[in-house]
Image (tube, rainbow, N blue to C red; front, side):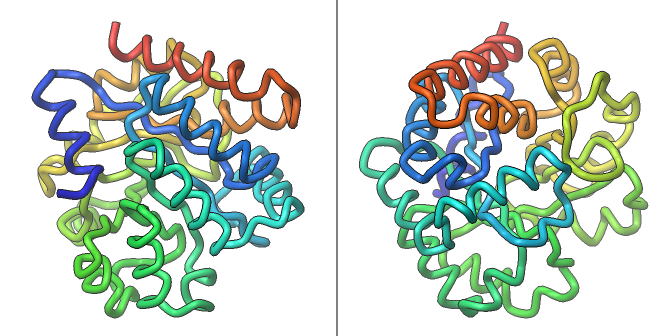
Length: 265
């Protein structure tokens, strides 16, 4: 069984909510990414999303765009991200999803990239700009390699569209809780409950809600409506502030622990 499926099965059996954390791979460098992944595993993170740096990250706000830029400047490439995942796997079985743009897969070749990702220990791909209808043999290749294709649903997605997307997803469905790009917000959307109920009419998969969750209070509120919450920009912002300082890993892990505690207390 895929690690994502295993983790959500465990969460379900124990009545707990999941915590998904996003960071930009290679920000500030890939060794820091490895160390953060191991610290997150100990801090209670259930799924780690690694953003593969791309020169034109259209779905991302400024915080994550700058993280992608720092990742590119540190020499982070898709093969080096996969090598880092392989290094993480020597010490941790934390589920890992690559948050990636299709151009990077297309350049390598779908079959080759998916095969290499599975061999490295990746559990799923969230391809930001790949609509299900245009995925060609992507889903078949993912199934063949045992990887989960993660799909996004947005507040503006009509129900007939959700009925197309949701059944094709594996692992979990990522509900983008607000319109626009990634980024920290002062309050969470008041339509999360309605939209998650709509998604559940079309898929039994766990729903992870993200985009804009910035603190433990927001995490606790959103967790009432979903099987998991996703926090990205608030973590990436702390990484940007701390850079290569000695306090990077313990301080960021401390913040992540506060999120984990908020949804389990």
